[in-house]
Image (tube, rainbow, N blue to C red; front, side):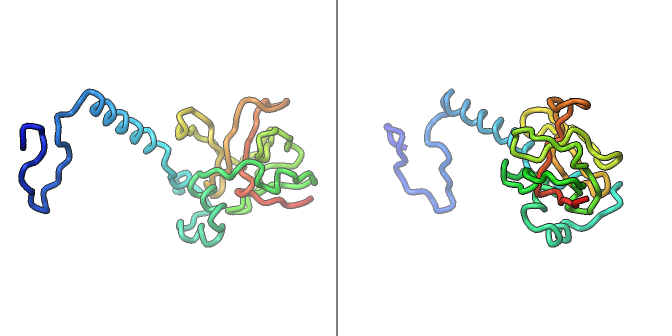
Length: 182
């Protein structure tokens, strides 16, 4: 190196120069912040829907994708979320049953559907034994995730800001369900 800190001789092609000066406090803090952000985002990665070992309906991930199509597969099997106001089920007001698109399990009655203003089909209660819940900590907050009790498919989340009689708002992804008129 020369007195001004520059390299004075060419290096072999295999030589990789990472830093040509001593680390500063700013560069160390930037590196630490990048590491923290990376660790936080690692927790937000998409994972397969609930472990399938206790669900009566089971398929390989490839079989689910072939059956469901890309968007429903991403939601039901990898816990993605559809865009708000994108589901035709938001405007479904006929009498009938909303079922899991993955396995056909009846999940919600139209009698419990209400307009939440959130952009997703919302219900104040599921049908008996239709869904299971688990804690979801993937979005820097704790939420309660809702899965189909038969295939483990991710349907949405439940919140404590719904109407009477339960006070619950089951906020479901429309792409994860189908509607069967009465």
